[in-house]
Image (cartoon, rainbow, N blue to C red; front, side):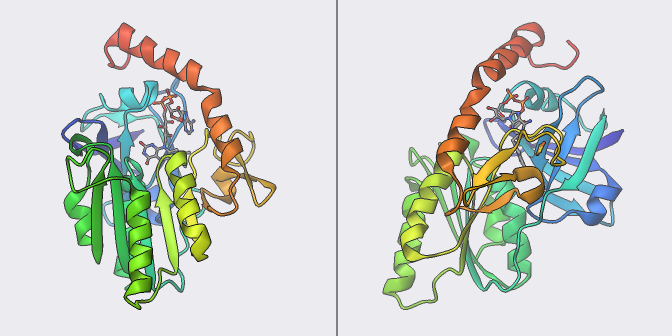
Length: 288
Ligand SMILES: Cc1cc2nc3c(=O)[nH]c(=O)nc-3n(C[C@H](O)[C@H](O)[C@H](O)COP(=O)(O)OP(=O)(O)OC[C@H]3O[C@@H](n4cnc5c(N)ncnc54)[C@H](O)[C@@H]3O)c2cc1C
Ligand code: FES
C-alpha cells in the first residue's frame, strides 16, 4: 500500500490535483519523462501517469492528475493520509537531455505537469529553456510560479486570452523560432512537446520546415505497461512501437498521427459511459 502524503489542487477549477506518494523504490530511480501505473484498490483499473517530481531522501514521488474519467475522478476523492493499492514504476524511457544547449518545452493543459520536470532537469543542467504553456482559460492554468522558476523565458497563453497571451502554443512556438532567426540568435536544438495529440501534431508541422528535432510524449491507452499486451502500439517511422517500453518519447516528425488519433477515439463511447456511471451512482466518491 502506498500512502498519500500530500494532496493539493493546482488550479481554481480543481481539474488537476497534485499527489505526493510515499514510494521509496520508485523515488530512488525516477527520471523526467518516465511514468508510473497506479491502482486505487484491488478491483481498480491500471492508470498510467507521468512522474512529475521526486524526493529521493523522503522517498516520495509526485504525480499531477487531471480528472479525465472514472478512475481519475475517484483518485481526486482520495485524501491526504489515505493509501492506494499499487504504484508501480518508474516505467518507460527517460527524456534524453544529453548534449542539449537551447530547448523549447511546450505543454498543453495537463501536459504542462509532465513537461515541468523535464524543463526543471534541463534548467538545472544549464540548458537554456523557453517554456510555452497553453490552456483553454485562466481557471485551469497550473504551475505558474514553478514554470517561471525553471524557464529562461516563459510564455503562458490561453485560447480565450483570460490569462497570459491570447492564442495557441503553435503560434508562439513559430514566433520564437522566427525571432531566433531574425535576431541572429542560436536556434533551438530541440523542441519537446507534451499535450493533446492534436496539439502535438500541429506543433510537429510548425517545426518540420525548420528541421528542428521535435520530441513528443505520447499517452495512448496502456494496459500492462510492460510491452506484453500491445495496447499502446503506435506507428513511428513506418514501424510498430510500444509507447510503454519504446517511449513514451518519440520523434514527432516520424509519428503517424492519423492512426494515433483514430485509435484514441476508439474507446471513447465506453469511457464516457463509465464516467457517467460513477457520477450518477456515487457523485464521484469511491466505493459509494
Ligand atoms: C505514459 C502516460 C502518461 C500519462 N500521464 C498523465 C499525467 O501525468 N497526468 C494525467 O492527468 N494524465 C496522464 N495520462 C493520461 C491518464 O492515464 C488518463 O487520463 C487516465 O488513464 C484516464 O483514466 P480514467 O479511468 O479516469 O478515464 P477514462 O474515462 O477511462 O478515460 C478518459 C481518457 O483517458 C485516456 N485513457 C483511459 N484509459 C487509459 C489508459 N489505460 N492509458 C492511457 N490513457 C487512458 C483516454 O484518452 C480516455 O479518453 C498519461 C497517460 C499515459 C499513457
Ligand atoms: S501497455 Fe501493453 S504493450 Fe504497452
